[in-house]
Length: 222
Image (tube, rainbow, N blue to C red):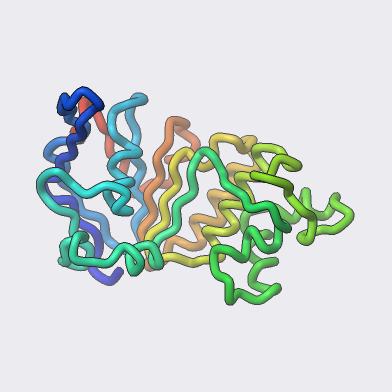
């Protein structure tokens, strides 16, 4: 992403099972340049996650358009788009394999040294050091052998390893304690150069370093 991302009059509606139409977002207008960190805040149900879902093309806009480097997002293949993005959600997903391979999934060609660097950036190394098999520890189905905070840090390491052009954190640090959250934010800060970062958050501590804070209320920016 060289020029940035622009939301132009973006709106989104969906139909429920009874065929009734519901408006989620309306008249969303803003622009983000490479290197910026934008925080999205607002009460539950105001459309924060829907906004980033539109950016990742999990849904297409109902009106208006989203442009990356001036090009309508709908003209970009989903495969190309997702190759340049990384998403870390509140509910981490892990495969039933080792910690190392779960991190490497972000970039399968990464070396062991790069995986180790990403694990340090996400502050996984502190708890990995206590495990008999280290990074080769098997996490179990859905990572059930680990705590919620440990699973979250692994998914953050996976995103950092990918080094995407667009990085999205959707309540991604909610399961972390204050000290670990601060350390992870330091890692994100170091990776901001030349990238666009979106942070969806409720906690003030998660958005203190944002260049801009966009407040969503009743489906629009206030």
